[in-house]
Image (cartoon, rainbow, N blue to C red; front, side, top):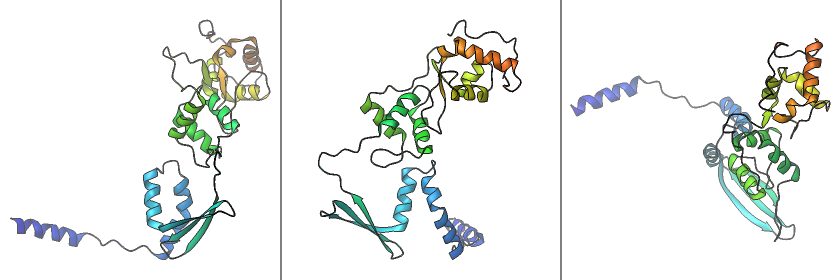
Length: 239
């Protein structure tokens, strides 16, 4: 019986196509995509470790006291060597997160979780004080150190702060109309980073300035609205 099973396994293995070795062109294409794979938000630490183990034989570190630098000599699997020099942190020196990033995080926590904030910071090309990409854990550590509260959805579902789409929906106008009004200073809104959400306080959306924007949008075809002019006012209980 065992012999029969072994024969069937051997026959199955023999019928399977043999994997072909990658060509030089295939390997070159993989190298060209390495930067994209490394920087992709879906690439986690485990995959990066596998990549490093695949392409690097060893890294030799030394210190250049005269230049106050750490010298890294990378021995690649193919035999090529690369030297990197990094500034050596002096005693008492701290690599603090820039103030504009801290300010942006203080505003983003009004509507976003640490995961989302990390993605926004990376999308804007920002790094930590140590030059690393942002992760949820690093955003959490920054919040903890700076005593910035974590984002928590409102228990009653009535969020005090809204992003652009939700604020526009509440007003009954299009997001573009609201964004243009905010950019023109006609309504108060927060825009922490160039590539980040707009943030609006719910209570501001019930004030006269916001209602004037709605009125103008409904009267002017250049400012399309997102709802019918006879829509019931939504601010009587949430302003």
